[in-house]
Length: 483
Image (cartoon, rainbow, N blue to C red; front, side, top):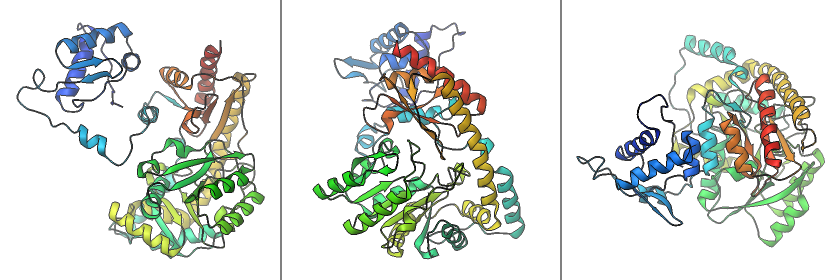
């Protein structure tokens, strides 16, 4: 999707359609939009530029008359000229063949729109899965940075697995979760997403089958698909993944790994029961099926601590345990970790050194000091209290505005409410209309193909007033579509 962060000036004496045509020509002339690129539909352009469709038609006719674009039946409108009339002195290089042949797949258009809207300062973010700035412990981090300055700490490269100080502190923390680990079996990553990328690069091969819960946030990522792997969704209920279905499918076609979010599942908020965790790990041991456990939301619990991680039940070294500090402390630190067998960790550490030569030493120092000083525990207590207020505000708003038209879960932790409408609607239309009203949501089809009744509501980023207002506006948009 082309990046458009501009709108025509309605106070300018230049007609709107000429402003739009000029903007597009400038993008082409500068080499930002390449020959052969397909322009968005007229409907999409009218929404992005905030003008009537007739204005877009006039702009397209202007560009076509100048020989800049060309439309064809079924193929849309394509850029065909970037030199003769636009920049006669120089010829910009055509990168299209390289762009289309790259290994990593392009994000879905809607994911690109979400990523761009995340940074709109006027938007109410009911889709974000990260804490708001108000929840980030800036004071604690500043205290640690001041200590680091006084100590004269070096900021050079760290060893491949990550700083030993941080890995030792993590092992102490993991022991409180029932996970026995040595520093040599821990790899520090730049967030949990990098952990998945390293596993894809180092342990899986093209055409591998990866099992996962259905729905799952992994469907909205390109991490596994870009390396030619297949995702196989397994249904889940209130207690977790359907073990019988998982292994019936596994016997038909041997999969490579299971990816699971057993604690405060994204997007449903489910928590796998202790009994099912034990059965799952025992069965995976018998069938020799490795597990990737994503446990990044663990510390965001409200009334009681969640069950021990799958890794705590693992006696055979089958579980690769992924954790991190982005969701409950600070996304900008980019600190995550993988816990696994020493052989696997050595392999992934080698790949990590080939890709980024180690995670930020500054971030690792902050994370280690947060754990060692007890500030991490202190922060998590405050975090749970503040996030619970946001969850309660979201549930109250849903009771006010969605009663009778939808049902939803009451999350025991994490950031998500999985809203299910009583009747199906166009999720794309709802997303676009909500965005026009400065409300950012995640439609359910990001997490399950063709889902047209679900919306993932996140309460982690918006303020209490924004949560109420955003859900109120969203309900009106849903009701309009149901009529």
